[in-house]
Length: 57
Image (cartoon, rainbow, N blue to C red; front, side):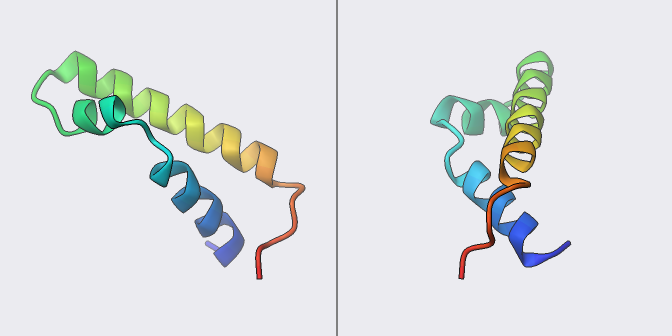
């Protein structure tokens, strides 16, 4: 993975709301799966939107 893609993913994870972080670490399997799907969608969207942006120096 190149540095540009890694930076996009890191920024997305940093912006994840607290409820999402809580659900990712929770014991409720349905909530955890939902949180995983939400985070995956956030990352996919950020990668799609970031594909045209220039890497940060």
